[in-house]
Length: 315
Length: 250
Ligand SMILES: Cc1cc2nc3c(=O)[nH]c(=O)nc-3n(C[C@H](O)[C@H](O)[C@H](O)COP(=O)(O)OP(=O)(O)OC[C@H]3O[C@@H](n4cnc5c(N)ncnc54)[C@H](O)[C@@H]3O)c2cc1C
Ligand SMILES: Nc1ncnc2c1ncn2[C@@H]1O[C@H](COP(=O)(O)O)[C@@H](O)[C@H]1O
Image (cartoon, each protein chain N blue to C red):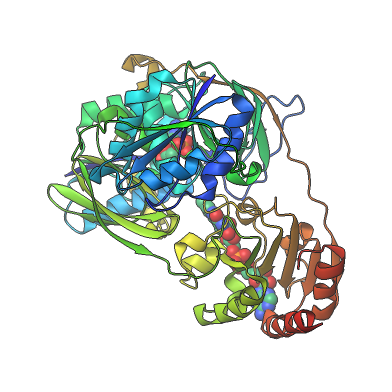
């Protein structure tokens, strides 16, 4: 087994999703190479070297990898793919964008969003919004896999003894170009990495009311999430969406506020360790998965919650 | 310009699917089927581009059992001009196979743009658009929340993990839709009647000469462990107390 992991990073720092993906790789085999493709990203490569299970780091540094456009990065991966039996990336927007392209160029399937490694060719993955788990076996010579990060712990950053080398970029294909970006500004922890997530739904009524969530999130060091209905209504940015077709989170504590608990939402949060829910409808399906449910008007309950958390802190 | 849209027939998003007693698959007999929601968004986007005067023809393609004709009729009733069904009643179609079939349709139809959904809500694969783009060596704009079509290029705003990103892609290109791209229209009755007269061509997958053998074998399917419902608390203070003392998460 020779495994290539595609690093998730922003040219400056490694993203934790890479560590989860490396844990999945460790369960497949021991010869793990990590590819860092970007611009001015050598330091990211050096940080990967500290991970004990990584034997080799490849850095591809070129201006046309700065934004990790799928066309160019997949061409790069294709160039080195034949050295590997498995190619893994986290099931992030980036990983989902790039890897299927690699798979098609290699004429092999992709196994999306694996939650468990059964063996080097057999994996468990969710289908139907996570209502069903499928065990699938791949017959392809190279397994192309995206990894559901919440299902694997982060690899430990110690004891690294591997080597690092630069690899030659593939020429810019020139068919796609980065034009602009609008990143959501936030001082909070990242949604997918936060220990606590406080999410709001349509019940929040309007965007300004997300302030009620922020006040509570501030006290808990939490990230803020949202249901699709809340995002569609413009209460929260798109990258806050938790669910089947948004982000998958599994924090220590998930608090759903004014969220009914549609299966598409549950798909993104039901593996949280502890779930709390505040909803004024006692029949809301969210209560079927919540460890602690409070039937209440969120406009009364949320300010009270902020106050109680202050009391707790001063106790 | 010409746009090709891929529409998949999938279990309706309101259905709670059940695993078959022998764990071989999911029960789909007598289950409500609909157009994959992301594909409705794809059709809608093509229609809006046509309404803006930029597009001459919209061709909808579906691959699968004969009943996919219904899905195509829905696309036609929404406003697509023509439908193509690539019929395959036996073999389970996986994304790579679908991408290969779509590629052969693209070679035949020569569209400037192909729009697909970002994800089927049954297999949750999120692969086909990217694979098609790769097979054609075309650029891709996945998870699109805004599309601005020019004569030789298209600007696609994408929903990414940290926010939004806009790319400029040379045409021809592949786009996959995200939820915020548009809100699909409801089909009006007169349009359903009109759609019955539109051309719906039926091809056999075997006529296209592409290898659609499944690459992944499903060994079994299971329901995930059920999460037990917990308790209801009466007050916010009780909630905080439970989270602090019992669950020890705050
Ligand atoms: C293709 C597809 C993909 C989807 N993907 C996702 C996804 O990834 N993530 C996702 O979340 N959804 C997704 N959905 C949408 C999903 O089906 C639901 O429509 C959505 O989750 C509902 O959001 P909600 O719970 O905020 O709104 P609603 O279902 O409207 O629930 C609002 C809740 O707020 C409560 N409420 C109202 N006022 C108050 C108050 N004052 N105090 C307390 N409670 C109050 C109500 O009792 C209700 O339970 C998807 C749907 C489709 C078709
Ligand atoms: N059998 C099919 N027929 C037509 N389009 C399909 C089919 N399968 C997948 N697609 C398209 O590919 C998109 C992504 O599907 P998937 O890769 O399966 O998640 C869907 O939203 C459709 O637009």
